[in-house]
Image (cartoon, rainbow over all chains, first blue to last red; front, side):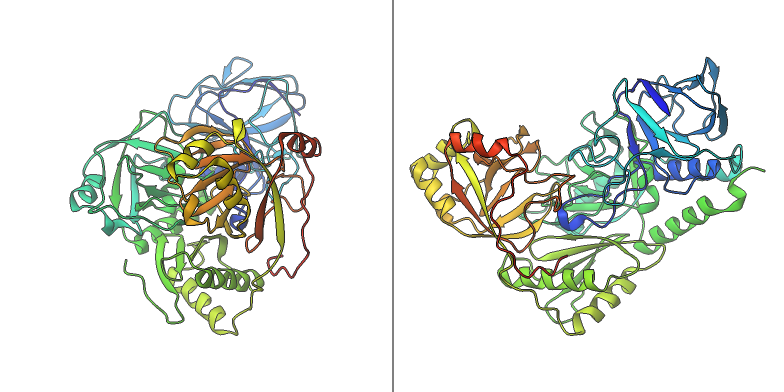
Length: 310
Length: 248
């Protein structure tokens, strides 16, 4: 079990999401950076979708009541185990009674505390992921609080201790995101389409798992035009009347009525999960075919035997 | 980017590198609604292996798929196959659901303004809203949020210029010719005219969502006393008429 001594800013139980319930208005949720979660689970020898704790910006303090193994993946939160530094992207043994602290981020937005055997919470609609807005799944449908006690699955010897650094570098979060053209790209004024890729964008404080609001030159339609509400894909870059775009993210609204100027490619969505307020990003346009190739390359790297160091 | 038209009224467009949007025109109509329901029923009856999620809306269905396993063309082919293999018929009348609503006051802070704007009394707005039968076109936005149409023109109302930071669960709102009940507390820009004591969405109830797409929905005005009585049994279900339900 893991006792929550300090929960951090926003820590939730996440797996790879709850797909298939869009017809009920339920978005998939799941890890904001699924690459980090999957690699953590590979290191530990867990199933790829084993639930872990997703910490945001500051990660709190966690007491273990039994010997086990952990892997911290994603961003470096300056973690220590009973005061000794704990590196990210590698496996560490933990002894009963030890305290893991994850003070605050030194790189991106999220750090995953993966535990051998995974975090054991009841599955809701087939998934352990927390959907904060609707109070669905995870630990009692909410972010963790001081005093919560988390059960973990049976622990086992890990698959590896660390990653092949050269290969792992290719999985590092990007600040230049590859996007494909949006359904309403050609509704936008040519200057606005050029501005999307011709400037850098600042991530604002009003960003969370539902969506990230960006700040930059305003984007405008050629002429005012109303849209009938339709389904929205995760990663859609919507432009509301304010002209300031927002990236639709994992705990998304399933439908929406704002024009979409572009979509973040599936391969670069995990990078979005590592963006912090005030970070600066850029977009580059790629074709759907190139985006698909990028995703396939990323998949084969995550699954490759060579990714784990001997 | 130009949507391709495979005949039978549907058009395909790439909504992202892992999503295909199937559209049946670009207007809200009962006919396009039936086409969306029929395609969704066909896809739920015989799922496409690489499809991971469906996002239905008024006249379109977004299909999200695993781009490592399929391309847009693969999904289009599978959709066409299902559309040509005998179209599944969706019953036009599925269930009838009645939702009790306490109109006005703190529960409906926009009722008076809306009435004034339309040159009506608050009672007129309540009467028109509650005497209309609505269809749940689809569920979207947040879990259990059913888009209900069609609101009579007389009480049609624009979205608020500045959305509220928090709309309470159970709030009944109008936006354009649509009405809906907010299932959970979220920011929202619809004009609020009342509130229901019913729990629209509960994660540990079966079914979780009180409304399903295709439902016929009516609102019944209730007093604040009755609101309090019903609220005591927060998990109460409204009287529903069992009917054919192809979605489950």
